[in-house]
Length: 136
Image (cartoon, rainbow, N blue to C red; front, side, top):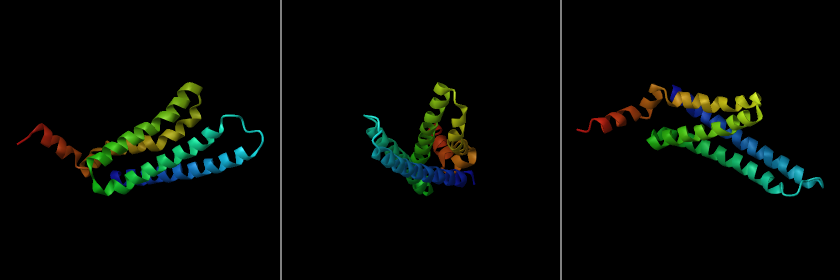
């Protein structure tokens, strides 16, 4: 059950990232139409939506591969969620803005669900660890 919840949250995270990327692309197009666009910011208005779209595609790709139960899917998801924690934590630390803590809720929940014994068993990680420790 925790594995299914983690997969659902991963899909939601990917969908929100894609929608956010599309929204930021729209805002970027509107912002660059006006004469008040600061010089040198147009690349940023292109880069940020692309990053959002890429993050969303990666999350959904991991969720699609979830049913394979392969170790690389589990490891990649742990790495993806760990990296997803970095931007809000850095912003909270540097700016002292605790309102960004909501941005870390999904990655933390998914990470907790991934390290639960039932999820590790679902991905068959514990058995592969035993085989490495006790080769026959």
